[in-house]
Image 1 (cartoon, rainbow, N blue to C red):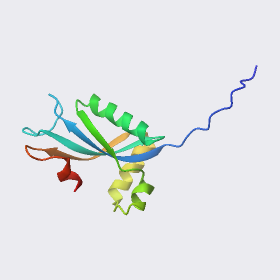
Image 2: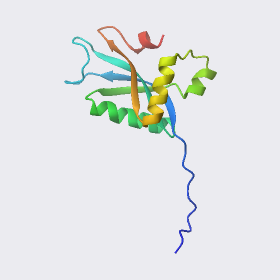
Image 3: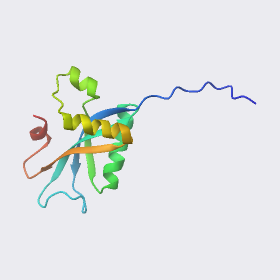
Image 4: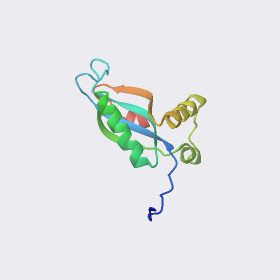
Length: 121
């Protein structure tokens, strides 16, 4: 008996750069007095939507409260946009790809009166 369905070609994993805004949760590990924060993450996925879903799930497991996710694309897309990407970022992107994981590169806590605008501009 043969399977008449054609096999789907496995799509390659890519690494996406995501900026995630988080609110507060009781055990989130953010500094006392912080109103939330922003996390720069490198996440693997076959597309950006999958990378976002996986990142949100991982952050929720870590007792963080994801509010908003902004995608900045893959390494190649970021290079095309003129982003300067250092060796440390490249190594962490490779780690996310090798481990099919989410790597948090940077955490910026927010305090009263501070917002995502301060992080992205």
